Every structure is written in C-alpha cells, then in structure tokens.
Length: 114
Length: 109
Image (tube, each protein chain N blue to C red):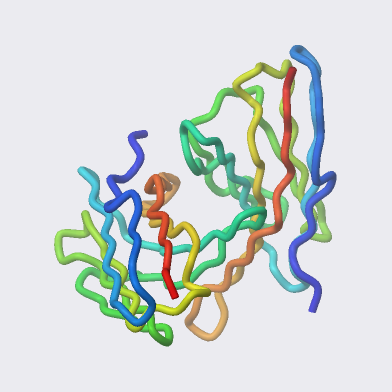
C-alpha cells in the first residue's frame, strides 16, 4: 500500500511570506500529526489531527496552524515566516488497530527561509 | 517543554556487539516510543510502550518502560551494518510529546 506522501519535498521562501505544506496519510489512517526537525532543537511535536479536529497541540506560536480534510489529508500553514522556521517538517499518519499502534512518517518537506 | 535526556549521543561499535541507549526525563509519561531515522528519510517507529515496567521486543530490539515512568531504554542485540542510523526516544503524556536528541549509531563490519 502507498506510504505517507508529503508535498512539496523542498521549498524556499523569504521572510514574511507564508507557506502551506500538504500530507496525505496512509489509507485507513484517520490521525495525522506534524513535527518540526532542526539541528538545534531536534524533533518537536507541532499538532495532531483526528477526524478533522485538532486533538493535541505542541508549544508553537499561533503562526503555525493546520487542518484536516474529510479524506484525512492534512495541511499545515506557517504565516509570517522567520529564518528560524527553516526546518524539515514531517508528518505521520497513525491508527490503533488490533491493540497495537501503527505510525508511519512521510519523507518530510525541507523548508528554507531566506 | 524541555526535551528528553538521551544518551549516549553517539556510539561506534563492532558488528555483532550489543547496544544499549536510554532516555530520562524530569516529567512522567504514559507512553514511550522509540524511532530510527536514516538520512533523508522520516523516522520509523520501532517500539511503543504503554505501561510502567513493560518490556517489549521487536526482533533484535528490546525496550523497557521505566517503573517511575520517567525513563526508558532500548537494547539492540547482535548489531548488523543496517542498524546504522539515529535512534530517537519520545515520551508522551496527553498533549505533551517530547523527543530525545538522538543516539547516532555506527556499526563497523
């Protein structure tokens, strides 16, 4: 079955602009979560969506937002970009099935802010 | 919130050796997760732990959820070259999810 896909894979933006990243989960997974990965701060949890509702949110400013559509696809948006927003943005889809937790990450979107 | 304390930062071992790494936190978690990330790829979930004291294996990997709920360790037995990568721990307590800085593992054939 197809894995988690993220688009675009690479993006260059300038300070002050906004950006929208997309994530398509594995079929049947209703939960999508987003993470930021940087050399300095490591992996950090952004937020999680389940059935179009934000279920959990990490400690990021309001410039970071997201949404989930009825087909479970998710987007995250970063407004008024700052240099420090340069990072690899990862999404993961997950489900709990048969008493176990399945989670798969996409390859990420590498965002560079100049 | 503060990230988890993961150690060691890096390990250089010979193929066939066993490996142990751990994560500690000042906060308690109800879930511990261990991931492996290869260059240019997203992390892969290796093991998920849900209960204090739980010991879970996945092939040559074994992980434990500490009794205090503030720590976890991951062991890899009989390492092979494809074990090379960065291993991350993560603790989760409701909406609070934090990660370790990673352990970079190098395996010499």
